[in-house]
Length: 295
Image (cartoon, rainbow, N blue to C red; front, top):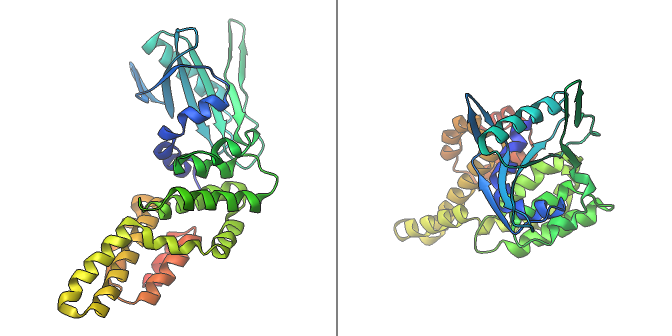
């Protein structure tokens, strides 16, 4: 998968992860504010995250966080450009961190030495952080990042993460969304198959019934049951719920490219086929595989 694909999950969730990770970076502060990511200084640059913090000494400083799932040989130059734009925009001290979430070992340079310039930034492999950094959070947005951190027993860690998600997500109906994101992140650690096995052992799949769109589909189907008969109405509700869950999953995994399949999903009236499509969508890395089933 591309860096941009993981970026979507990082940027969607990290607004609620920021304080936990900043503390893990051993940065002392009393206040933290998320600032606009786009910087305009004759040219425009966009960073992943930029925060304004107030230190324990009462003085403000900026913190820039970048996430990388691959090694970028030009990273030190990128960070130097970011530093220049941030400084020219705000003119207060800047701390920079690159958080590496990839599979391979870090090979990026973090220091630049030129005759008239010395520059460096902080580089952290997220595997240096114990998974407890995130597993004990109250927020599912944080809990899923535990899968990227250091753990000696993958199965044990994955089971804990799944149990935590089940514990924290009930009536909000967001379990399916975070399970999808967890499966995507698990690929960065080669743990997707183990995760799927743990899901099956724990009967995690029942949580689909608490997905908000799934429940809305059930309710709509029961309303239709007044005219069609309750049994038919409930079946229609399950169909509606599964269709919405499938579309949510496809959009999360494949983005806008998946929209062309939505109309085909809507035409399906076979519950078994909808269940099969959902299972294939969970494991598939190619949109064409799902399209083939829809045909």
